[in-house]
Image (cartoon, rainbow, N blue to C red; front, side):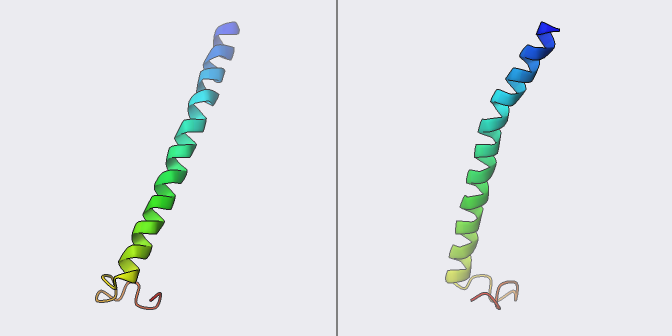
Length: 52
C-alpha cells in the first residue's frame, strides 16, 4: 500500500511542471500568432484577415 502512495505522490509532483510547460507553450503560441497577424503574413491566405 505504501508503494502505491509514493507513486501517486510522484505523479502529482510531476503534474505541476507539465501543466506549467503547457501553459507557457500556449501563451508563447498566442504571442507568435498575434505577431503574424500584426505583420499581416496570414492575411494573404485569408486565415486571419478578419482579425487584422
